[in-house]
Structure formats: structure tokens, C-alpha cells
Length: 352
Ligand SMILES: CC(C)(COP(=O)(O)OP(=O)(O)OC[C@H]1O[C@@H](n2cnc3c(N)ncnc32)[C@H](O)[C@@H]1OP(=O)(O)O)[C@@H](O)C(=O)NCCC(=O)NCCS
Image (tube, rainbow, N blue to C red):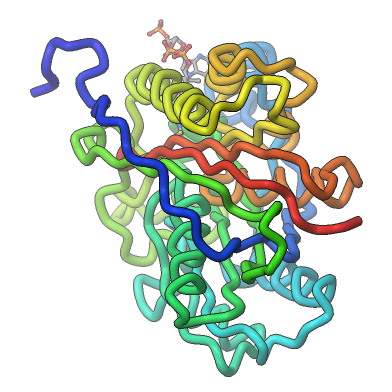
């Protein structure tokens, strides 16, 4: 049973700041979203909902769905662009990490499938199942591999083909999600002034009852929109209000805490790149940090919630629009199923 304490799932433990180590930075970033756009009106024909309800309650106007192919096909263009922009070949990657809840298969891993498709012949790799926090978990475990001396170049991918696990008859979930992903290359640098500065990653499995999919099977390979009745358990199940309340507190807490323990004011932060689950959750986080809304990256209106894809897609768009400058202080913040949540503070290191 859920204890009566309003925010029972939050551990108030203050985690110690990490020791200073060799800086690890994002040396290249790219993203991919499928070309097919589905506006809110698409759902008006399917379930009892309206464009106005979806926009006002979530901030979403449209999303992309991948009507053919699987997660690896969605991530592959982003991998190729990421490597091209860094000017290296796929054989230079030592490890590929894929954060996702919608791998092509239960096994082999999404990382193995992607490794083969992209020709990353010298890479080993693994998947991370941390839902919307997957990219943050991936960045920190990938950085750890470099710090530990195991790898030099780690490709961290975050993406989901949520359309393959949505129940298009459930208005409370199907309108929220989209398909897409992003890819970041992690490397070490001698430049002390850039890279990942700090992180706070958290998890509380007691939140699992509020957002889950009971079994995977071939769910992520089901044809677009068409689910045979016998596999209809392969859907996202969510208690939206419970997730909402927890996300508002969790994402804001870790974002404020990472500022506080690094003695940063709102003026010091160039960008907040939050997980894109609901505009109201993002607004609450930004308010708690005291951030000017112009520093908050929002693209939920275009893509909905792409789960592990939201943060790398936002970062990649910001970078490719030329807004992200060398030396910018960026806070990444996430909340997702598990519950998992966290924040990462980094100083942007790609010179434009
Ligand atoms: C799902 C979410 C948008 C619902 O918004 P909400 O303001 O909490 O709405 P409620 O769940 O209280 O539902 C209010 C009413 O709208 C209805 N409703 C739900 N979905 C609807 C839709 N798509 N269209 C129209 N009405 C809808 C509900 O059935 C309910 O009706 P009732 O009052 O007659 O029972 C919101 O809870 C949310 O974003 N939660 C977090 C989701 C999330 O981030 N998940 C990903 C992991 S981070």
C-alpha cells in the first residue's frame, strides 16, 4: 500500500558531490524523428478527446510515429550523423549503450542490433531500461567507463518507438507519446572547463505500480496500431495523476539540489533541458529553479513524450540551431517509470 505521506517515495538523502576526475564531455550529438506527423486531431477520430484538451493538459500539438521499421532503424540515422559530424568512422566506437524500453527484440539487445547495423565492429555494449531517465543513466554509466579506463569513445543512445506499445483505444495514454531518439558521443578531454560536472541519479521501485508494461514479448514489433487481442497486455499502463504528482516534485527536487550543491544561481544556468512529459511538469521545475522561461528547452509540442529520446533530441536541436555555445552551463533533468529520476550538470564543450 502507498503510505499516507504525500511524497512517500522521495528519499531526502543528500548525496555527496562526486570527486573531481578527468572531464568527460559530449563531443558530438544528433537525433532522428520519423517523418510522419500525427496531429491531435488524429486522436479525435479514435478516442473521446479533443485537440483543446490535449494541448491544455499536456502542451502537445503533434507527435511523430514510425509506421514501418523498428527502434534500430530509428536510431541508425542519428548514429550515422553523430559520427559524421565528429569526423570518425563506426569502427572507432568502443562501447554503445542504448537506453530504451522498446528494443527491437527482448534479446539480442538493442545495442547489439544497432552495433551491427551501424558497423561499430569494435564496440561492445548493453541496454539500459530506465524509461524516461534512460539517457541520463546512460550518460553517467558511459562516463564511468571512460573514467575507469575501459573505453575511450562511448556512444550513448536514447530513444523509443512508443507507438509499438501504445493502446490506441486508451485516451489517457495514447495521446501522450511519440517516437524518436538521439545519440551522444562521450569522450575525455584535457579541457578542465567543460564536460559533465555533477549528477544526481535516483530510483524508487515503489513507483513501479503507477507506470508499467506487464510483459514485453513481441510488443515492440507489433504492426502500427494493430494489436492482436492475445497480446493486448503489451501496452503502457499508467495512473497519470500519481505519475504527475511524483514527477513535479522529483524533477524539481533534483534540479534545485544540483544547483544548490554547486553554488549556482539561476543566472549561472544557460539552459534547462528537461524530460518532455508534460508542459506543466516542466514549468513547475523551471519555477522551482527560478529560471527565466527563455532558458527552458521545450519541444513537447512537436514530438510528445519520446521517453528515452526527449533529452538527446532537445540537446541535438539546441546544438544544431546554433543556440548551445561552448561554455554554456546546462542542467539535464528527467523523471520516468521505475520511478527513476535525476539531473546532470554539464558545461557544453562543442565549439561551433
Ligand atoms: C495524463 C495527464 C495528462 C492527465 O492530466 P490530468 O490533468 O491529470 O487529468 P486527469 O487524469 O485528472 O483526468 C481528468 C479527466 O480527463 C479525462 N481524460 C483523460 N485523458 C483524456 C483525454 N485524452 N481527452 C479527454 N479527457 C481525458 C479523465 O478521464 C478525467 O475525466 P473524469 O474527470 O470524468 O474522470 C497527466 O496526469 C500527466 O501528464 N501525467 C504524467 C504523465 C507522464 O508524464 N507520463 C510519462 C512518464 S514521465
